Image (tube, rainbow, N blue to C red; front, top):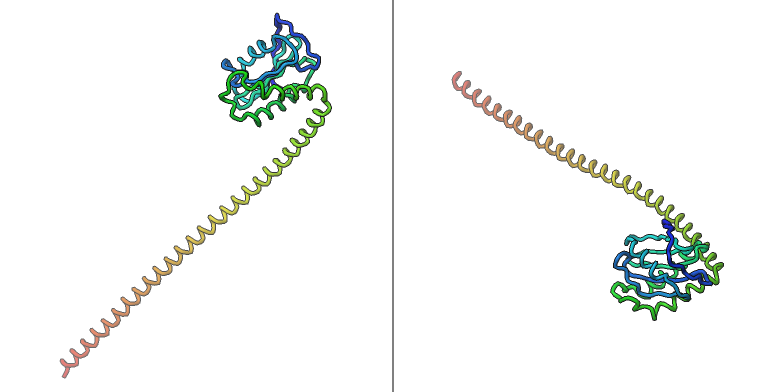
Length: 236
């Protein structure tokens, strides 16, 4: 769930009956954090402390919990937005289940909230935050069921991805074999072409030699015949 920073504050915060005390959605974790929507069923200085914590967050996607005066300040940072809920320290996993619900609804309803002004989404999103806060505290057994289903889905996804990775590895090995086979075929074809060209070249050379020999034979025959006639004339 992230690192836990324990510290004491001089401000005491009243306990909420439902265990979830204060929540906000903010743009830009860090020094320039801007709260876009917030909800709390009780009064207290939670926003001040939460903003102090939010200003120390980096922009990387992560989750983190700070603890102050027996309360946890739970942050979920994703894609440039910070989702916070303050809860009683006795609540373990419920705060992040709540933040997951808030994040999903916020991203669906306000995908372009990168330019909205401070508190400009209170009217539209505060009722949704209240609904999720009430649901998470009053019906934790439903969250258990959802968490179990999600864990099963994650496990099934993991198994599916492992099989897909094995299949892809097998495909890559087959592709390597096909590439090597194709390379061997290309080399064989290239060798065959070179062999054919060599055969043609040797055949041409052989024909040239034969023609030269034939010409020499004809030339010798002609010369021999002329010499024979010359000597015959001399004898007569």
